[in-house]
Image (tube, rainbow, N blue to C red; front, top):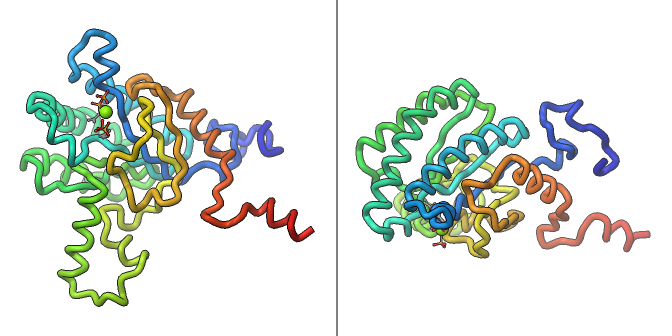
Length: 258
Ligand code: IPE
Ligand code: IPE
Ligand code: MG
């Protein structure tokens, strides 16, 4: 029993043993470790990416089941262009295949697909597939799935500044809220929880503005092995965090007022 509430899942549609208000609204994931997963098995890196894609399908399903409303996944960074051409091309193909194979199912499950990053720098065939997927699913609201592909946090901020200047906005009108509206993630709440697999302790240019007060869960598990049970553990760990936002916790306030 957690938080004095027993079997919360009887009252909600989530199988999690945590109160509804402790379920993060937005989870973001750095899906890292595909290459090392493959290396461990003596397989080519692309086999790791394929296994990672299979896992993504399971994670999306679990996200819907857990009742998380927004999921952002880091699939390809602006720095990943620096990998060998064979791997880059393989990753581009994987994105197209995933859309071809999974779109109908995702649509049926009520998933709304969005893209964050620079779409215009991708091959036109990929752009069309992505735009079609976004258009097809735009009225779904069970889960908002943001796919960060050709995404970089710095690039996102540079793009926002360029557009703010182009729109002739004056300096005194530039606020947090205005910047939010110019990011690729406009309209999406900041991530409550960021999960990074494969143990690296760095942000790797992911949601650097939006993560100002996100909680982190970092696990040594490689992405293809990150399963529903570990996902559940991440959410339950998150539910115990004391998010202070630079203030003092409400418990400490009560104590000092007593
Ligand atoms: C993450 O796995 C997927 C992408 C970056 C596209 P990696 O390919 O980074 O795997 P490692 O970190 O080399 O193990
Ligand atoms: C971050 O992983 C990018 C994605 C998961 C798409 P990387 O493997 O590119 O990050 P670094 O190079 O270890 O920082
Ligand atoms: Mg990596």
